Image 1 (cartoon, rainbow, N blue to C red):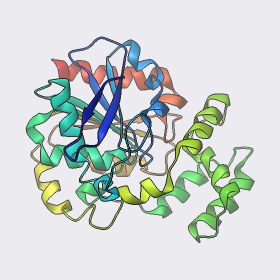
Image 2 (image 1 turned 90 degrees about the vertical axis):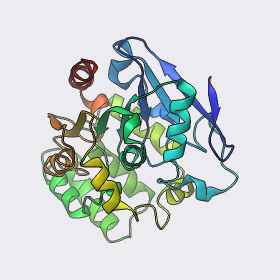
Image 3 (image 1 turned 180 degrees about the vertical axis):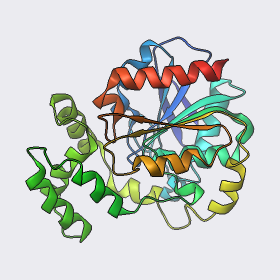
Image 4 (image 1 turned 45 degrees about the vertical axis):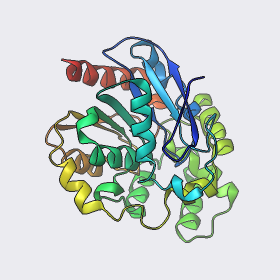
Amino acid sequence: MPTFDAPDGTRLAYHRKGAGGDGPLVCVPGGPMMPSAYFGDLGGLAGRRELVLLDPRGTGDSARPADPAGSRVDRQAEDIEALRAALGLERMDLLGHSAAGDLVLAYAARYPERVRSLVLVCARARTAGIDFPVERRREALELRRNEPWYEEVGPAFERAVSGKADDADFDLLDRLSYGRWDAAAQAHAAACAAWFDEGAAAAYLAPGAFGGAEAARAVLAALDAPVLVLSGALDGSPRPDSAAEVAGLFPRGEHVVQAGAAHNPWVDGPDDFVRTVTGFLARADR
């Protein structure tokens, strides 16, 4: 397991999977603050492209920082830069999922010259001043009205919105993160629940994390790199039209909606996911 040191001395780990392509695809997990293990092989993407899977500080095989303040999302951009240097890459292809969208955008705004391409998978964009209101998640819930679990999940959703949800409610809400609540989705959700660290997530989103949104947005609007924004047709955060807004930030942005997918598209439709990402990266390589 390879490691490197962050600027504050925290020892961070990453994992290599697969081979192929013109350089690795550096993958940053969301959560926030989940270990990269939840990516698996990204639905088989490792069979087509070498993946470098980062364990953010305090997750997976990475050390916990001495000062939790270093885990704030904007400060972790320096961890991504230290990883790039450790890999010996002049520029890199970078993927961020879910809450890691905020982190890879913070990195791209700070080091635009180091970004060869970006892949944003069901990704947040608060770094650029774009948020996804909880009401949009209700729209996604209504798309699932014919699911056998809908009558249970609907009330759990309302309790969550009002701040009255318990652990059982959040377990029910996991169904909204997947296009199908099958064995693969259930196993993935159970692993994510075991790995989630509420304290680490709070440190990631500490006050001030998104204070530079206007300046970041200006840099991203001039980013000279291709950007893929991939959203799930059934996802509530972001809904596809919100993901299209994110793609519109970039001069070379494109948006693809994966049919039948929610928040974890490589679990919902691995073949579609791999086809979309590899096609994009092949164009970026050229």
